[in-house]
Image (cartoon, each protein chain N blue to C red):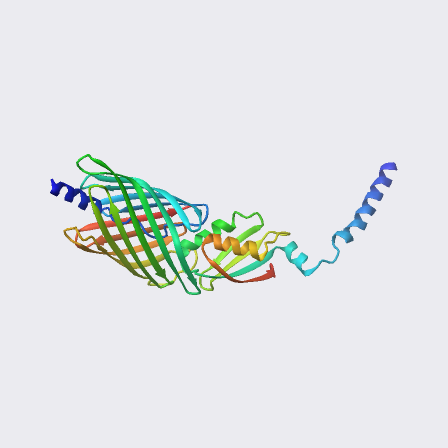
Length: 111
Length: 210
């Protein structure tokens, strides 16, 4: 009986805590929770052999889940891990480290 | 005696500019580049501490003349022009080491060079000039390339380029040498195969980045 009461109390507390964990989030927080998707528009992206450097550089970052290079669009697509993000300055620094020039950044929640 | 120096000079002049494709990698990147054209072989292993500098070990061997250069090569990306549909680069190259001539003598040796390239996804042009001082010989050589991609490939696909390389070695028997070649690359591996018309020699170059 004592164990049953303890179990019931724990279950009740867990149910009360659940709504708090699922509290409404800001759009930015929601995007981070799903894993943000960043599109970086860059200049100079014409050589596949050289653009391999982009994947090498971005994949070393803990926050990055995946990287795709679009030579046709001159874009780098970066998927962030859930709860992770990188600010524009950090992304620009990595693109410069890869040998390219950033022109603009778009951000959106992952599908 | 002068003919011996001349022969040594020609042998080392024939140690043409090593693979010039992307002599500087991304910051933290390593690159292995090897050139073979039937008459000489070269191997350059370099590391790029920044995206504008690389330092590497260079060894060049002329098989027919039994001459060798070994030393360090520093390459500086002096300027890069990144545009929406193109990229241009200007590199400065400096080398220092020792040259072993075919007669067994060893001399302090060095070279300085400039390389420029510009490319879109369809067209590639480059120019290299290198001045050497190997103690017993001083020489200058030039190389230019024009390339066209027959198709535009996406990221990660096999890329193919048809190129023609024109070299000028003023002291050589054939001062102007023309080499049609094909360049292929996929992922971190680049390979080139060609044939030098005047010399009846095959060319095989490769580059691997990691």
